[in-house]
Image (cartoon, rainbow, N blue to C red; front, side, top):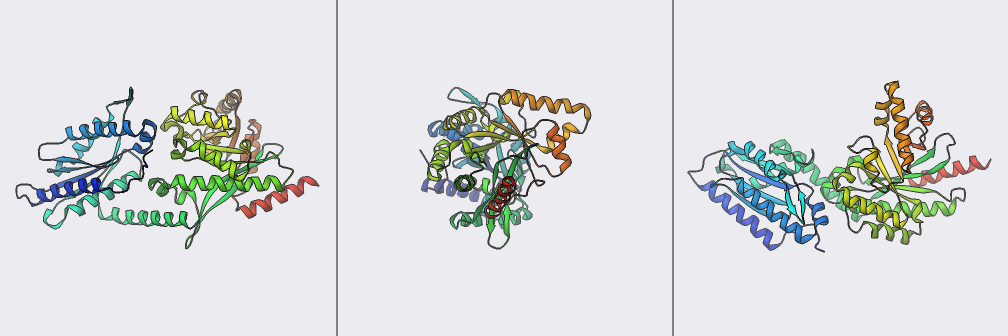
Length: 435
């Protein structure tokens, strides 16, 4: 299978050089007036679509996209397919930029037919406008447009951004973090912290959720929210996530051997969107279990609603294959996305984790308590255990315990702990139960 982490080939370099040459000729043309503009176009989530469609069909989709883009521009304008899912366009009349961006999105939204399937795509775009063409080089304009695209993508797919000086500062910071993340992977700087999960009422220990942490050489311990977005944009999140998976499996196997009171001790590990759509996911999970010696039923893999919604058909197949392997599947953060319990019945899920913010919306009005109970009952009827995360007070424990939820986790019970502190926490629990 072709590797989809695009090194610049000679062909790609030639395309870029040819585009810059055309832009240079336009900048030198005395008949071309300001403002001029370059649009950098990145097709959203194409890497994942390429995995699902296959390389040949992915290439066909790119060709179809290219033809659609060409149709958007006039005689004095041109488009180039730089590489993979990236295109660039030159606009001779920069005042038309916003109109063209709207036209591009409309063209891409019209379904493409690939393998008999109707596929709609969107694009994230960055724009660089030249007000004084004699002071700017084609390379600078293209680079500024690319920076603007990355900045737009950091605020969500399908957006566009016009380059400003402040964006370069932001981009530089993100680029520096990307370099640091690559070094961190090489230098093995990622840690796994663990947050306990217990049963309502009995406080019977269920297991831990494994959480990624970065031991930054100068900034200390960073939580996933501080680096996750950059890691995902840089296509590094899967490598980090698989590292967390293997370490969490190994640590759990060690704890199970040490603490005889917890033969059913489990660990929940988060999967990224890239992982749930990775054709090698099941193989990687099985390899982690074999290498660490952890039983499959002790591993719970957490998937966000957003990950399921990117490609529901593929996600359903992945979850089914994980089920065959013996691994448990958990839907994380239910209530903050677009899915419903009825819709989720199509997936092979063992647990649902409710986001506390969703439940508190239900409980703000007494009339909605019946709705919360209905949600729990529906989940149970689908054969799923129900977990609440984010519990911080004893009052919250009582409130959600009365609604018959199965398990909870949160800072009331314990903040996420290092492996050493988790070991000490377990020892305390074993000691207390043996008295």
